[in-house]
Image 1: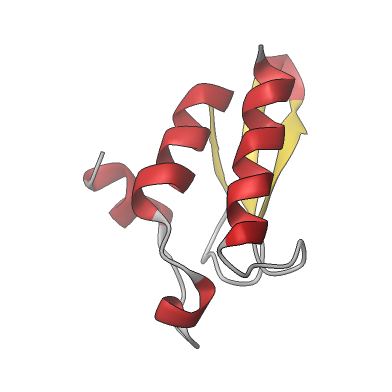
Image 2 (image 1 turned 45 degrees about the vertical axis):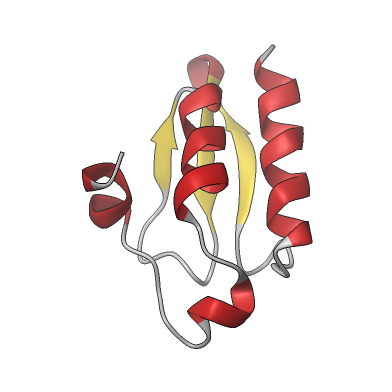
Length: 79
């Protein structure tokens, strides 16, 4: 269920120290999910399950990222 994937991704992001302004997943048109925030160079839009996988496997803890910024192209390349 897409909403469950979005909720799970946001729960993981909160556990990793991100507030919604810095990095969060939102529902997007046509059943897609949108990962966006101040810690991401530009939004990443895809199927909710894929965005959850990106958050689960590729997004570091906020403390590890520090003042850095994630790039969607780098995240996709590492899938």
